[in-house]
Every structure is written in structure tokens, then in C-alpha cells.
Image 1: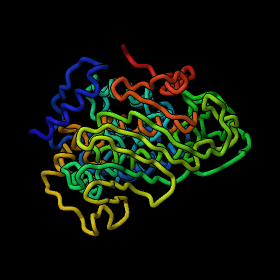
Image 2 (image 1 turned 90 degrees about the vertical axis):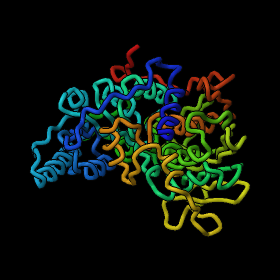
Image 3 (image 1 turned 90 degrees about the horizontal axis):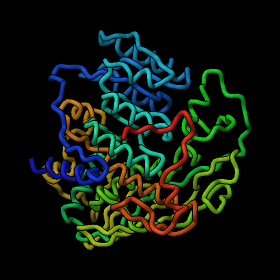
Image 4 (image 1 turned 180 degrees about the vertical axis):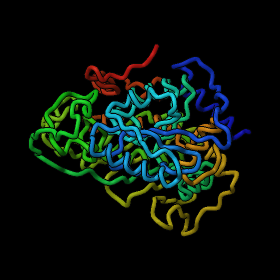
Length: 444
């Protein structure tokens, strides 16, 4: 019981200032043999992987798909229908261009959101308000302010929200975090996150949007611009308008593990500074001066400073170079962990951690399957391993890093108020102006 109480206490503290509603999780409406009906919103490359990974699971019935690209939508409907048919389930999958129609369906219990980043928050908020549990791909937000909105609404609606940072379900990452948080390395002084650099690309020509794509709706809250094929689908990651480049694309994974390891899932850095190379020039307000080329950083070296309870001051580095992974440096040595084999070692040996120590940081039913953890938590109403509250804090570090390198100056951040002190321009970048009619609307 104590391990779950600590998780609940953290969540209550992290969002209490925004919504006074107590953290009371409703009793599950699902019996042991009930199926959870799921709809998929955004079924492109990564979305297609979710369609294949979730459709056909025991206890789950996929019933609907949505995408602004008709080609992706038809592919998803076909895949879902074929998988369902083999299991004797409904094969007539409903397809939608507008997600509002999908989440309005009362027979849908949960949604999987895999749109570009600039759509995540709006759809997730409306889905939760419609009573749906949510699995949303990382990076979860476009700005720090969006993360604050999501945590408020999640607490208010009491929905189960899993973020697609699947490294949290990887055993080598769990072993490493549990070992560090139980003092295995002694006091941590530094954490290094090597996440790889971003690509260069452009100038790209203006083209006519393809007939199967609703370009205006794809743009959503962002400025209306002419269609260039390399702005959308997978390449949206390399435009600050829609994402945060490698800083959020891979930072969402490695900074998440790093900050989790040093016990800062309910707080953030007090200072962020760094250098970067961008493929296009920026003005003094941090805006790219060209609109025909990728504009997120290709190379960077950022330092974020944390005041931690367990270790005191810790310096986190986020950089493009070095072997992809996270290195924790402490009094007793170093541990490097990544997705490769043999990682998470101290002096060539895997650190010994007990099942109880892993359970203490996992905080929910132990299951190395990230999807299954979400499904089980929908039934139990426990927090999933990659909850929205901690992810907001960890991704905020990545957003602050991008603000610092875009403005090319040091950022002083107050983790309690979640504001940037003494810098009006930088503080304004914690949120963005949104284009009508696609604004994120949050009830008072």
C-alpha cells in the first residue's frame, strides 16, 4: 500500500495548485471479462504501429480510426478489420476525418492519440472531458503551458493517461533507476543524455496539397502556411512550429529516465543554458527567418541545473554527440543505460536490485508491456507507469532547453510557479498563440 500512496501523494501535490478536486480515483466500471473499446486518432507511421500493437489484444476491441489523411485512414481500417475478423469481432471499422466525431461516441472507452505534437493537447483534453481514457504518443506537448493544462484536466476528470515513453517499461531502465534511487551510486553529481542530432533539409518547394490530405486541419492551431511535403507526416519533427526537433523527440525518452533517476519527477531545473547550431537563422525573439527549410537544432549542448532532495545539486547535460543513452555519474561510479544489449552496468556487472525496489519506482502492476500496463490500469484505475504528471515535468526541461538555445541565453526557471524569471520574451515562449478555430479550450 505504501508504494501506491507515495505515487498518489506526488500527483496530488503536483496539481493541487490548479484544481482543488481531491485525487479520488473512481471505481472501475470494467469487470474481469469486459472488453475495453478503443479508437485510434492519427494512424500514420507511428500510429500504424499502435494500431498493430493494440488491435486484437485480449480485453480490447478496436472499433474506430481517425486521420486527416484518407490514405492512412483506409489502411488503418483495413488492418483493424482484418485483425478483428480473425478473432470473431466486428470487422466494420468506422472511419473519421474529424476526431470530435470519434470521441463523441459513447461506446468508445479509450483513445490512442498519435497525431503530430501540436495536436496532442487539444485532442487529449477533449477526449478526457468526454470520459475517455488516453494513450498519447510522446513528446506529449508543444509547450510548457500545454503540459500544465493536461495535468489539470487529467486530475479533474480522473482519467487514466499513459504517455508513449515505453522506455519506462524496459527492464534495464527500471533496474538502473531503482538502483540509483536506492543509493547504489551514492550522491549523483552529473547526468548526461546523448540523444543524437537533428537533420538539415531544404529549401523545399511549395506544392499543391494532395487531395487525400486536409492540409488546413493538419495545421490546426499553427499559422496557416503553404503546403510543402516535408512539413508534414514524419518530417513535422524538424519544424519548431509543430514539434521540438531531437530535443523533444528523443529528449522525451532520455531526459525522462534521467530526471526520474534523480527523483525530480515532481519538479524541474532552476537554470538552463546552452549552445546550438540551427539550419536557418533566427531573429532576436527566437523565431526562424526562413519558412522553406527545417528549423530545429542540428547540434546542441545544453546544461540544466537541478536542486534535488537526495543528491543536492545535479547537472544534467543534453547533447547531440556521444553514444545514444544516459550516463549517471555518482560517488561510487558510473552507469550507462540505453536500449542496446548489456547496458545499465556498473563496473561491467548489472546492479542488483530487489523486486520490492523495482516495485517502489514502478508504482503499479509490473508489466514490461507498455500497452498492457495501460489496459490493466484502465481496469484498476491506478496510475500507469508513464503518467502525464511526471512526463509534463520531464518534457518541460526539453522545452526550456529549446527556449534557451533559440534565444541563445541563460534561462532562470522557477519550478514551483513554472515561470521564467526576469525574462519577458523567454517567459512568453512557455505558451503560443493559437489559430482559430483550433484553439485549446479548457473549462473554467
